[in-house]
Structures are given as C-alpha cells and as structure tokens.
Image (tube, rainbow, N blue to C red):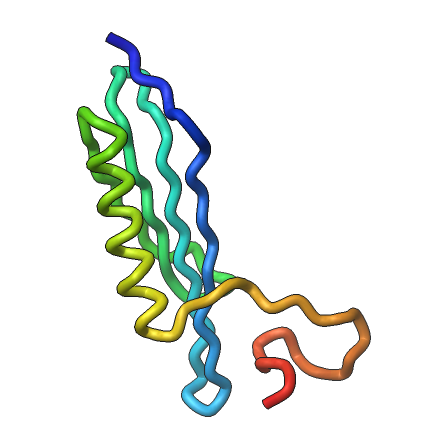
Length: 100
C-alpha cells in the first residue's frame, strides 16, 4: 500500500548569537518514500555548511507528525526560530541578528 502525505510538512529554523559565534540551522521534512513508508528527514549544522542529517521511518503519518512536533518544541525552547529577513544594504553582516 503506497502512502500519501495529507499535507506538506517542511520547516527551516535558525539560531544565531554573534556573542557566541553561533549560526545554526535546523530543517525537518515529512515525505513518502518509494517503498510506501513515511519518512521524517531532519538536517542540522552551521549555516553555510553541509551539516548532518538523520531519517526516521514510520508506517503512519501521525507518528511522524508527533515526532516532528516534539522536535520543534525542543528546538523552540533552545532559541531556534524563523529566519530573520532584513532589507538589503542595512550594513550588518548576515550572521548578525538585527536590532541587537
């Protein structure tokens, strides 16, 4: 039986702190595999680098979504959030949080 995803799940969040020379990203996506399973893929690392990734396979989409949400809560508690967009030419390097 081939599984289909009821809705797309894709997340990109960042954590930046110039005082600690920290610029990290975290990506999660839920997608079907060629074998009919549901796969939660997560990738993380330093912004601008390839980083690491890990895949979790599930037979039910609901189980993948529960892990997705649990990991999201954990990352939000550690200071990760949406990528900040700044106007071009604001004079700040890309790894500096705006307004700090």
